[in-house]
Amino acid sequence: MYKIAVIPGDGIGKEVMEATLHVLEAVDVEFDYTFADAGDEYMEKTGVALPQETVEIVKASQACLFGAAGESAADVIVKLRQELELYANIRPAKSYPGTKCLFDNVDFVIVRENTEGLYIGLEEESEEGATALRVTTRKAAERICKYAFEYAKKTGRKKVTAVHKANVLKKTDGLFRETFYQVAKDYPDMELDDRYVDATAMFFITRPEMFDVIVTTNLFGDILSDEAAGLAGGLGLAPSANVGEKIGLFEPVHGSAPDHAGKGTANPSAMILSAVLMLDYLEENDAARKLENALVEVLAEGKAVTGDLGGNASTMEMAVEVRKKL
Ligand code: NAI
Ligand code: MG
Image (tube, rainbow, N blue to C red; front, top):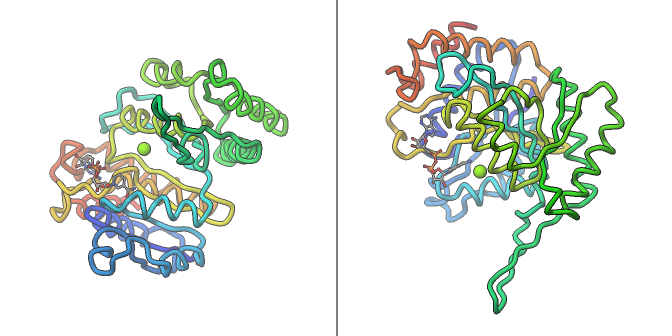
């Protein structure tokens, strides 16, 4: 029995969460859910987007499923990442038959450093303009590289690629690349290489099959993961994980999608695939594969799918179909 915090949030967050919990009932793993509030709607009522009570509920759980927030998303998710020290952001990109993937052989995972780099928020105005500080610490670089190798090992992947711009950012990314090769010494069976971020952006859309696990710094990871989501069929299909030492938080990449909210037309796949990531995180790998395969069957048949995938099923109808396959 796993203790799971559930934060449905706003808009389609609530709808894809309901659909996903319906599917999870048919998975052979027992969950003890605690529901918690966060987001725009909660803020309208109380003046805060993320109450401390929610943070405590998440801290007392083994994992958290998060739907989406609206305008308050940055406050909610950034604060949760800080409070829970979620230092690794995991974004898989995979082509599933029946979706709008640009290639049929995409299957890689981006592991993004989530705590430093150019996103520490140290910007300064000066007379000439403005500057931003970019930070790489040995500790964070080591931690994220180690996470990437462990993740590769655990999920049966063969190769880890460090992505950087060490030719220009000689000190910060130089340290990142050096740390990567040091950590790699503990994983002699893993293939490895490193690439520049600009070339990587190009190879995503010319030879995506060359990537397996990618580890990179905060800004590069942010941009590359959206490119990867576009490559692999769009926001309706893109899941993510935010992982720390103690807990993992799993959420679709998309937001509250006001244009779909309340209509029951949102694609639940990204949230369902986020639950697959959660099952893998809990080392319930058999259950994870079963759930993923059930979704893959429904996508491939292309009948009970939502509008963005060319069908006319509702969010819940698609979930019911996935559950039937289980
Ligand atoms: P969005 O991801 O909500 O929507 C972007 C586009 O993708 C829209 O056209 C939407 O209809 C479509 N889309 C997204 N998810 C879909 C799904 N499951 N099925 C079918 N179509 C889907 O991003 P947008 O429009 O930039 O932001 C809307 C709100 O969401 C904003 O208030 C924003 O702050 C919030 N947001 C929250 C995030 C989070 O909670 N992690 C992440 C991104 C945005
Ligand atoms: Mg982003």
